Length: 219
Image 1: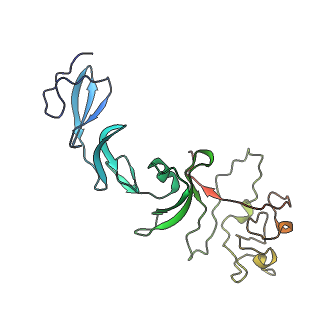
Image 2: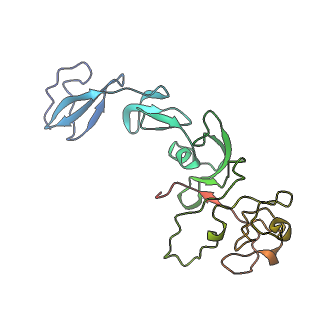
Image 3: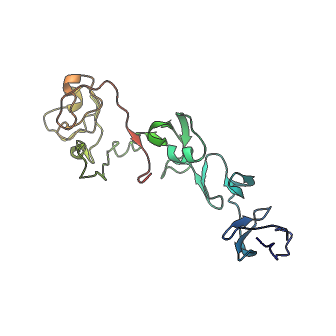
């Protein structure tokens, strides 16, 4: 490959570039590209206030600081466990995140970084004012697993002392011995402490342990 013909203090004239390669200046303030064995100045480049100019495995560029995610030019606070995984956290445990629509507030969440590729945020409902209403969507109708949560979509969370279900005559949380998003009671109830009261997809088998995890769609 020929030497490039650029005469710039940012890129030495002896540098051999690969076609299509993108280069960042030593101060991370300029962006160059390689075309036809020559290096051309593309545009200005600037790190976000929450980023650092550094040279790592991916080359020299702006990298978002710890607990921030993005391309380095734009960095936002990490909102879930999947972003933490991409930020290099690979150990399951409790982490602090900054949930969407919670400006300047933090939340400690349990992250599963090993199951099925990792990046799972254990289930959390945030709105007390909204009675912790459940939103369920995106069910794959071709699945053979069944959809026992459809009845509970948009239901408020009920406990034995906070009866928010829609049943007129029953307190479902008392009846099934556990808090849940009851409609007129339930097709599914992960929190029942009595095996004979467990129902999932119309089956009445007991389950000793359950975990409900969240991860961005399409991952």
